[in-house]
Length: 349
Ligand SMILES: NC(=O)c1ccc[n+]([C@@H]2O[C@H](COP(=O)([O-])OP(=O)(O)OC[C@H]3O[C@@H](n4cnc5c(N)ncnc54)[C@H](OP(=O)(O)O)[C@@H]3O)[C@@H](O)[C@H]2O)c1
Image (cartoon, rainbow, N blue to C red; front, side, top):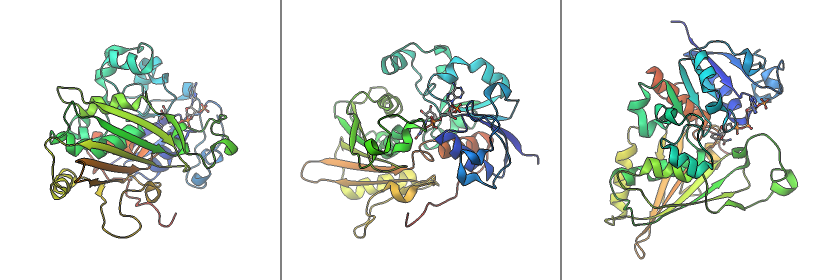
């Protein structure tokens, strides 16, 4: 069977680089084009040195893109919505990893992004691309939106509790997300300059982070949940750890919570429950997930206060971005979801 052709727009960025790395090893697709406006004509490995001798492809500009079977978009916010028509002419299937099409409600989009969406009527035509939440819809989707990396960790941590109806609208859900520097992309700024960024534990969005809206959208049923989200930049290149504080209604015992998570994720190839009594890695930790599509979830319940602390870790560039996008592509194509995504991560790292 001939392989499907895939192109990556925004392939010189961090998410684009990870897409290229994963797609080059994927047995069902052939990577045909990768774009970068500022690196046109350069070999991919001149920007992504880990790809040396993996491909002879050179970067092209967006206006040189040709028709393909699947088009991945790893462009800055705003670019997909402003050129959707032209992009659709290139490929029937689009997987957009930006935040342009994550929210279904145009009003919610305006509230959180501060401006009207360019094509609000198209928001609902994109499937929110976390396979663990929307596998069935992805199987029939032509347009898929990736999720935010912090939102993905928050959602995968809390989804089993929400699904069981244990998160009450009046009970606050307080989430603290810690994230590495690659989450802000490869364009340097003063905040990312080494003397400023090195050693940082920097609160950059104590309130108002846009991923809050995705979490509310995806976790809420008929009534909106009360999600309070803060984000802190930490001394890592890759990695997200979310610590979510919740009060279950009705309260559950530790063993029942454990059974609930086991049941929810027993058939999920990338979800692992991490809750050990001993050892250095008793709870989820992003360090050992670098480069892998696994997502580790754990929890601790405080019998005195009734608080349940849910921890979730992933690599923002893989399960929080490119890897999740490839997993969504596998769903769309009816492939085994793990195809091309079996790298288990490194230890020590
Ligand atoms: N980093 C993460 O952890 C993460 C996780 C999930 C989702 N995302 C989302 O994924 C997208 C890419 O993120 P990133 O971190 O990879 O960003 P990045 O490193 O800054 O890469 C952006 C890419 O877009 C290209 N680009 C920039 N301006 C362009 C223009 N005017 N026309 C065409 N191409 C342009 C850049 O290359 P040239 O400038 O050479 O064209 C580069 O290839 C963003 O929307 C981000 O929100 C990021």
